[in-house]
Image (cartoon, rainbow, N blue to C red):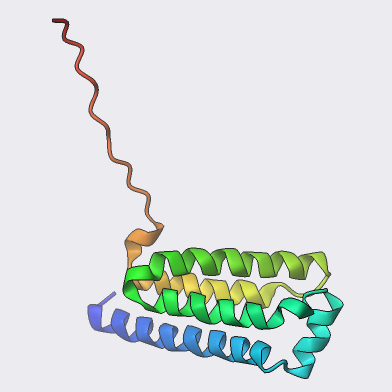
Length: 130
């Protein structure tokens, strides 16, 4: 992929992720009635505002280049947990999965090495006898 095309796609996905996470987080902070109903049913209403604040903190970590890896890790755990809650209550887990796919794709476009494991080969200890 050409560098200019990659940059445009990366920036577009970054804006999309930012808008989605910000909208979700502010809805939780504003105690949107639809969310209050859902969170009451699953027993998470007391934590709704805290979850919104966490999303904004994770987003800030993800957007800042020096903390992108930790932001990715935090988002992965957060939305993985969201999928688990959705599955345990018989609801549709695709929304958190899609958000997580957008986040992973954005992270990959910023830095492909995030998803690579590079093992350094250790040198063998010397076997010379004194």
